[in-house]
Image (tube, rainbow, N blue to C red; front, side, top):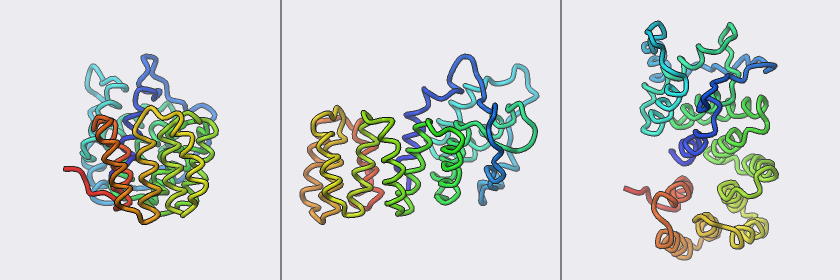
Amino acid sequence: MRAHLLTVLLLAAPTLSWAQSDFRLSTANMPKLEDALIPLPPPLGDTMVRESLDMSRTPKPKPEEVLKQAVNALKTRQFAEALPQLEYLQALQPTKGAQVTDPDLLILRGCIYAESGHQEPAEKIFKKTVLISPSHPWARLNLAESQLAQKKYADAENTLSILALSRPESEVVRFKLILALALQKKFPSAEQELQYLEEHANTPAYYFAKAAIAFSRGDAVHGQDLVEQAKRNYAEAQTGYFYNSLVAQSWLPKQP
């Protein structure tokens, strides 16, 4: 189940507001989210209650350092470590109550849901993030990932089409849009999007997007051949995200 959301968060980390030297939480003029803090299901919820970071210690940990630790914990699927760090960051918000309104914090929470296999609450969190911060690209991309994981392909297509309007140069967005189209058997539209990647791609996106179309058409041999071409031309660090996206569709085996 780990396609995607985690990698997106890691790609986004350098641009998050918490990673800046002048740490600010963007809570001003934000709507209240009555259900943003959906209780985490066991055993994650139990972990949340049992563990917390010591906010009384001196000096207090810097928020950007805690964020980095939380992202690293999520990367290694150590949710028991990521959750207390999430709560620590939430407690720093200058407003009373249990409302999470910072988009980056919501994305982190949504990724924890998604990576622990709870896609419905993850989708709900990502939708709230889009409402709060419509221009936040990682909110829409994570939302689309969650929709794809739930086989809501038309919803994912709509989400990615909107995102592509503001990020036309993003090969990741274009690849995911082609995947959503191929999964709906909308091959003419998928081929049209593929033309852009063929002309502009600087990553393995073109090979894997074309492979997605082939697999969806039932041509596993051609799809596998395209994947092998990508692996020959690009390093594993560049192909991993795209490869795992096809693993999520059961088209490829998990990498050891």
